[in-house]
Length: 100
Image 1 (cartoon, rainbow, N blue to C red):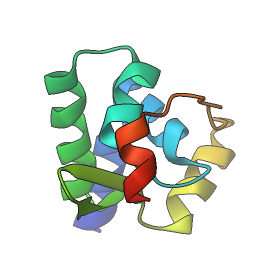
Image 2 (cartoon, one colour):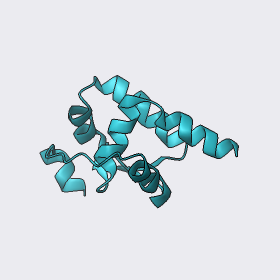
Image 3 (spheres, rainbow, N blue to C red):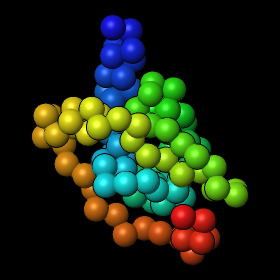
Image 4 (cartoon, rainbow, N blue to C red):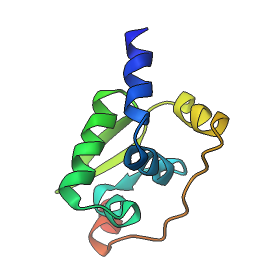
């Protein structure tokens, strides 16, 4: 039960919801998430850490870049139940494209 509460608390923030929306169609590098969210990089990093600690996201390091993805299909199902749709993002960076 505590895990579910932690997950719901992590999703109870507009910035974190936006981050999850950006990841609903697949893995992204942190540098692609930052402009899509429209917040400063340290702010986005803090929210990414909260989501990862709650089990919403998982990450992997590729060189200097950190890639994030939604850990469970259940998270996407929760978003869909709430009527929250993915955000289409076109933000990429040349550096990240080489690490995919």
